[in-house]
Length: 272
Ligand SMILES: Nc1ncnc2c1ncn2[C@@H]1O[C@H](COP(=O)(O)OP(=O)(O)O)[C@@H](O)[C@H]1O
Ligand SMILES: [Mg+2]
Image (cartoon, rainbow, N blue to C red; front, top):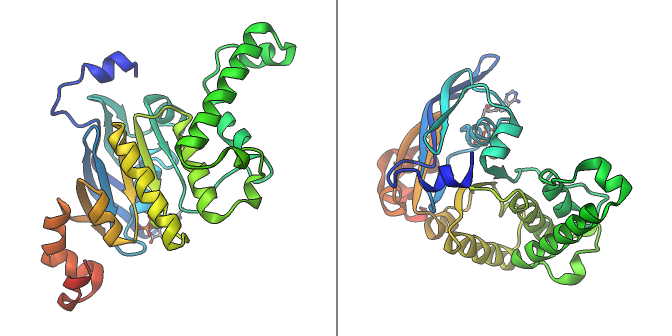
């Protein structure tokens, strides 16, 4: 998908549209005809109890799993049901994982540079021969990786640290920097605050606000409902593989079925 194609899309058309997505694992229906419209420049939240199907939806959205039924449209164009991760990454969807998946024995800088290497023009032969064009490209990639590390709030001296030696919060931010290296149109974050302490969570909140301010379209899975209420423009609620509600944070807060499904009792309304 070219930038021009994305820019010329009609204003009300969703950037990413999932239609009637179903996915079963053996006898388990992880997703049952779920439809979702993600609009450009919004933070769209996905909440629901454990096992509701949130990560499975991300896996379908990023091509890791293929849906049994349904269709994915990106910027108005059908990508069909059987989409590869490469197609979706090229279309502009990047993600982070609920269980961090960094290259543990590489430095922070290298982790981000790998993200960009997927997009180089000079290719492997150029890199091996260290042609001037390849060297220039390598320098540019390095500069961009350093910029992205700074953008997510990792200081310069973090660049040379091995990913496995970094704190949990820093590893999560590094994953976001690596996803941003793909220059995505949509950034999908699967529980980015999981395992973070309160100050790391506060920093993450600032980072997501900054990305939003810079026009990024974000799909966010997070258990911290308070955080979701503060960050999201719209929230969709999954329960047992079905979408049971969708709306603004305020609408979701008051939705009886959400209160019942997500928190187990109507007494729980105050917690939402
Ligand atoms: N690869 C898989 N193989 C078998 N079952 C799976 C797989 N991935 C997810 N599931 C099942 O699908 C359901 C939804 O899981 P998941 O999408 O991870 O939920 P959530 O992210 O909302 O906690 C669960 O019952 C889970 O056990
Ligand atoms: Mg999950």
